[in-house]
Length: 151
Image (cartoon, rainbow, N blue to C red; front, side, top):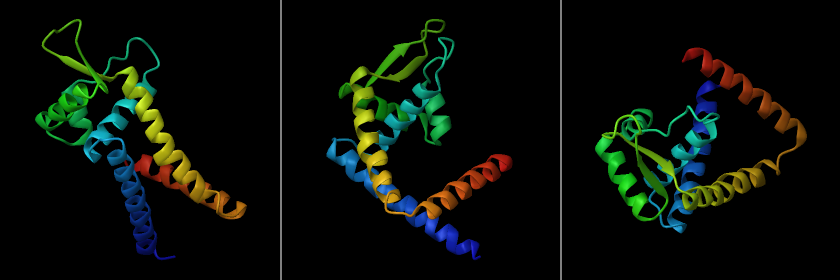
């Protein structure tokens, strides 16, 4: 098996998904970067299981995404103007702003994720036969496990 061929296919799949995301983001009036910020905030919301978990700061988001804080700050301002994001002052340190999706932002990202991911990928996967799906799932789980052990 040629690993380079697998990597090339993986890159092509990622490219197709990014193009789909870009089209959906534009359809809803967001830049690709704004779309990804909304996704990151949504993922943070999904990982919040207790009241102890605070929304991220601009610095947290910058660190996680590998962007400069001023870049994230600008995106946050634009999304805040669109009503998608709320900035709230930290209760313990009023110099710190925390960022979270607004109700409108939550509804929008749910709509976008459904259109961009669930329907798009579901339609593509539904065209595959059962054995191929089982092999794909097994391979993806193994890949995930191997990637996790390297981190």
